[in-house]
Image (cartoon, rainbow, N blue to C red):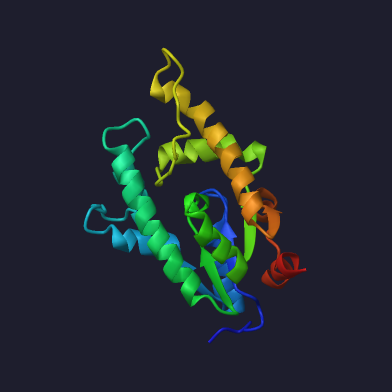
Length: 211
C-alpha cells in the first residue's frame, strides 16, 4: 500500500548515472511509492541473451552485450534493446496511478513520439539534469562499468579518427542532444548533482516536483 496515494504518477528521466534509481528507491522506502523499474524489466526480457557473472549487476552485463557503437552487430542489438524498452515502457505507463513512479532508462527519449506524448499525459515527468561539471565523470563511469547506451546514430568518428579517440567528444555531444530531449519531455527539471551533493528529505523533494 502506498503511503502517499495523493502523489500524482511520476516519471523520472535523465542520463544513466544521474540518480534516477537512487531517488526511485528513496521514494519507495520513505514515501511508499510503487516503483516500476524499466532497466530491471528490460534485463529480465534479455536474460536469455546475456550472461551475468557472479556479483555482476545485470545492467552492466547488458552494457557489455550491447557493446560500443562501432562494434560489429551493435545496430542490431540497439534495435532489439529499443524494441524491448518500448514494450516495457508501454506496460509501465499502463500501470501508472497515483502513488506510482516510473524509473525510465536513459534512452526513453528515443521511443516513438505517440508513446512519449502518452507518458507526458499520464505522469508528471521529472528530468534529473546532468550538469556540465559531471560529464567527464559520467564518461569515465561508462567506460569503467558499461551500461547499455543507445546512440541512435549520434556517434560519428571524424576522418582518420580512431573510434576510441572519438568517444569523449561524441559522448559529450550525446549528452547535449539528450539534455534537450529530456527538457522538452519534462514538466520539471532538477539538478541531479545538487540533489546528490545535498540530498533533500523526500517530502521536500516531492514539494519541489509538484509545486
